[in-house]
Amino acid sequence: MRLYLIVSASPSLCPGDNPQATHLPRAWAPLARPPPHGSRLTADLFSTNPGALKSPVSEQTTTPEDQRSPEDPLTPPPPAASLTPEPHNPGTPPDLFESVAEGPVVVQGGSPKLSSVPLDLPAGGNGGEGKQQEVSLEEEGDEPDIFDTMSSPKLQLNQAEGDGGDEFIQITVSDPQKIGDGMSSYMAYKVTTKTNVSYFRKKHWSVMRRFSDFLGLHRKLVEKHLHSGRVIPPAPEKSAIGTTKIKLGSDKNADSGSLDFIERRRAALERYMNRTSTHPTLRADPDFREFVELDAELPRATQTSALSSAGVLRLLNRVGETVNKMTFKMDESDQWFEERTQQIESLDAQLRKLHASMERLVNYRRELALSTAAFAKATAVLSSVEEHSSLSRALHQLSESTERTQTIHHAQADADFYVLSENTKDYIQLISAVKDVFHERVKTFQTWQHAQITLAKKREAKAKAELAGRMDKVQQAQEEVTEWEGKVERSQEEFERISRAIKKEMEQFDVMRVKDFRDMVIKYLEDLMTSQQQIIKVWETFIPEAKAIS
Image 1 (cartoon, rainbow, N blue to C red):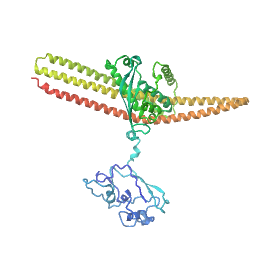
Image 2 (cartoon, rainbow, N blue to C red; image 1 turned 90 degrees about the vertical axis):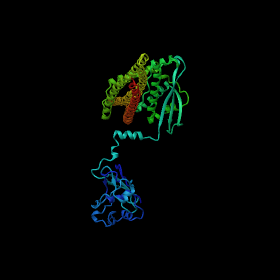
Image 3 (spheres, one colour; image 1 turned 180 degrees about the horizontal axis):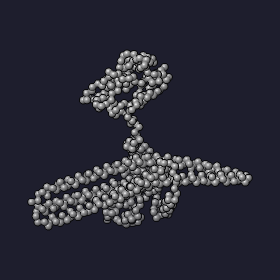
Image 4 (cartoon, one colour; image 1 turned 30 degrees about the horizontal axis):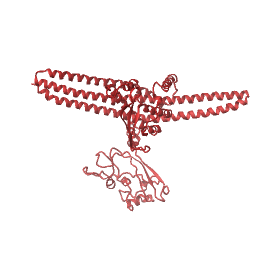
């Protein structure tokens, strides 16, 4: 015979941890664990005669008023007035089961809350053999159960971070290489994947991919999953100017602008691959798996060029969809979508303002680094013409210290750019992807509405044929009505399906957005504190030289 007790919303069950802790009556203590087999308590607790049930505190037989009903066999009796909290030595770590058997149970943080006690009743007992009952032991006025607060954003975030903790996938993009010469050349990147996901053949491998391969992967994912309501992370945008400079330039004489462009693209490709791999559906897609696993050159993605016929068609389609968004206004019946649409528009506007401010901050730090370098050169020249030896030495040390601070300012500018500015720009593009998903739902609604209008016309044509007595037309009209009734039904199901999928996608999007911005802010503050500490250390080293001037 087994007895199980489920206790929730109890941060601690150790007595003595909190002087304000609430003490449970001793009569409840035996419920915390099964008593030893054959003990007096076992016989009393599972006795089929309610009148013979003994209290664990007193050896007297309970009165009829205190007898428990068969429907609620574990309802605790009123606590005895003589029960007082037993002292506990704070220096001795309490044992949970000893405290249950020898003293009152202490619950830290307020009143106890026992949600339910499922038990297997003995054969011949109330409820029949093997029947499981749940006895509610919840007290009125208790604090909310911790499981009732799982809908909070913070707990959702922690839960999302814990989900799938046994599975991980990490993708790095590194080693950009220029293949070929002239306008026919291209950049290739090393894509390294580390994972323990079961459907991948290896745990750690690397492949080489060119930039157009990334764009081809994104196009395939959009064609396959966008209509299903999936938010597809956007791939980095093409830059005709930057690409032309790289193709026409040489590896040996590459300027800082070209190197900076290559690094920005490499980092953007890495962020794109990791965002795509975090989506379970996209990660399991055959095209994605082929992209990261196939150790061979992929078929050339010819439709990724902006000057190709496919690029022109994509541009025309975008123009058509933009016009459709401006001219068609859907009468929204779901308040959730109406609120989220307004939120997305507001978030897009504020992120664009934030990105503009971050761009100005990055430019300011780079200008500060350039001005600091100019100041270092000026002090170095001044130290060379200064005749006073100690002052000349101090000016020379000032020049060197200023050069070190210039390096720190430049590194901080790069951190501001890659940590703040680029991540914010990625989310601006992600918001555009979210808008595309919402527009797919509008297009599905338009299809459903068109099917309804056509069905009404077909029914009207059938009615006219029946009134005119043209039976040859009635049969054909009936077939068309049946066909369009099926289309209306399928369009409605598709609209409801994509609405459910978008809601699920947005829940995950919100959780990941909070996590990404949290990590971004923490990383930015850590880099900022490190740079400030380095600058302080530089000037603390220079102060003795300045004081030594005599």
